[in-house]
Image 1 (cartoon, rainbow, N blue to C red):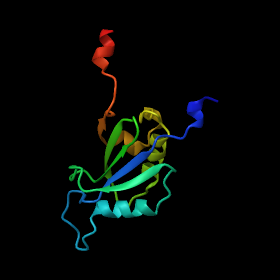
Image 2: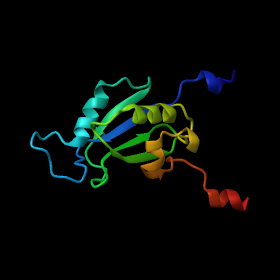
Image 3: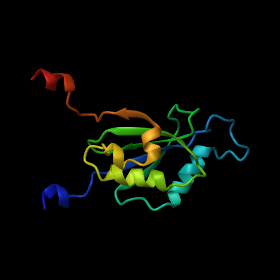
Length: 137
């Protein structure tokens, strides 16, 4: 077994937009859909090394609840169209798969269906290789 196989995965953050309204008006009880999703995730069992964080707004208001996965030297992913009352399993499955990667890249066929269809953005890590410079070498 290699040292990489023995080392725990890098820290991962699950960011949840708590201001999300899913394109509608704010509900009467002031708990927006994004906050409801956050509250449900607060009660869920997350993989060890994953931190759940509330964020104000991800500017994806018309496309359901939004979350981002980031951590370490990984790519960051922003996902939308999450239903605050729907099953959490697809999100938790994708989170666990992301957390297990060194670079944040889950092979396409291994991604939960929701991740395949509702990725809004993939943002490179703060330090990454420039593909144009690599091609010129």
